[in-house]
Image: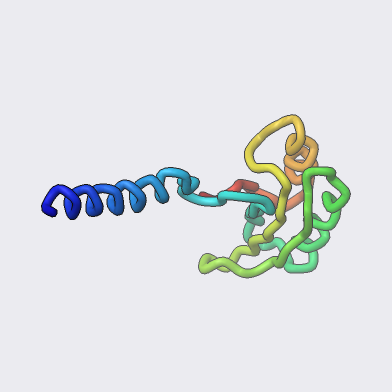
Length: 111
């Protein structure tokens, strides 16, 4: 009887741990659409920030343009959403477009 109980306990424990083994482990953005944050320089107006994001709206890596909100430091921060994450052949045109816009100081995918 003890062997049967021990076997059942082991089987149940193995089922619990193996169920977790297949779960993806990611420390941040796990699937598309991926958030790409765009930080603007101080002194850039809300209107100019929105215009800068919209200027790159036709880039193929872009899924949609999100909001432009104020940070705690008083700067504007825009959110774009992309189909892939990180620098790649697909995202390079979008990042180049953003870098060419006046007032943008950084564009990054947060963790």
